[in-house]
Amino acid sequence: MNKEVRDLSFEYIDIAMSVACDSDLLDKVPVLGTFNKLYNIRKRFKEKCFEEELKEFLTQIETIKLEDKIRFQERIEQSTEYKNLAERILIVLDGFNEVGKATIVGKLFRALILEKITMQQFKKSMFIIDNCFLDDLIQFKEYYSFERRSMSVEAQQSMLQSGLLDIKPVDVARQRLKNKRARREDNYYDVNFKQYKTTIIGQVILNNGF
Image 1 (tube, one colour):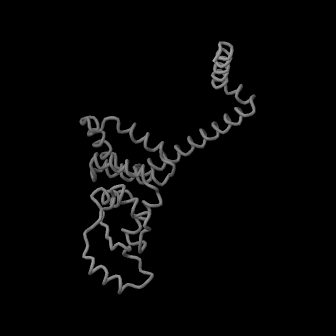
Image 2 (cartoon, rainbow, N blue to C red; image 1 turned 60 degrees about the vertical axis):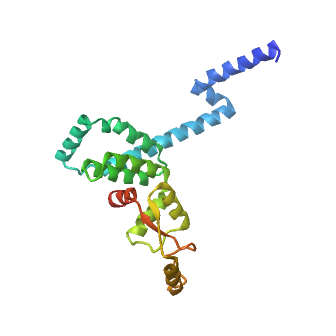
Image 3 (tube, rainbow, N blue to C red; image 1 turned 120 degrees about the vertical axis):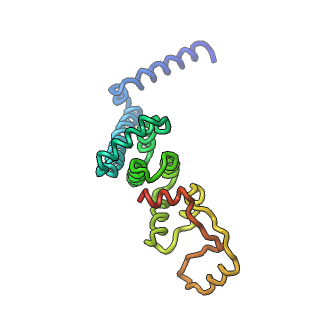
């Protein structure tokens, strides 16, 4: 690259940097103006979503008695285990793309305040919910609360990978016999005769997050 071209390249970089720092200038450049508008729309949308998620989260804990809140505050002050808890929750909420997840985390936080679950269980539950598809979590809840007769293969795999389900050893011969007796529409058992059981953390989320 000769000096003239190199100097010209640096000049364009400087111009781009200046434009990027000036929203009004961005709007005057057609292509960059479009990107700027899209960015601002996305920013406002993201802020609105976060507000909804935070509101939904706080709704789950607003009815907790004052004495329970005071005891929880004392636990926070006395234990390093609770260090940066608020920041962690806000970061997780901000990363959600569905308000329904904020509801689950809010209910789990309520259980943490009331000492129904441990801090480690709460943190692990937040991580799992953050990485799960909400529809799969809903299927998981509905199946184990007897609101639906089966879970999709995709939801089963998702719950298995996330640690909410584990494979339970089964008697294949007995399972095959049960399959023969089942009606065609009864999809209780998959083709590999697998059965699943909820893990400890799966039970924590089922009992406290819904």
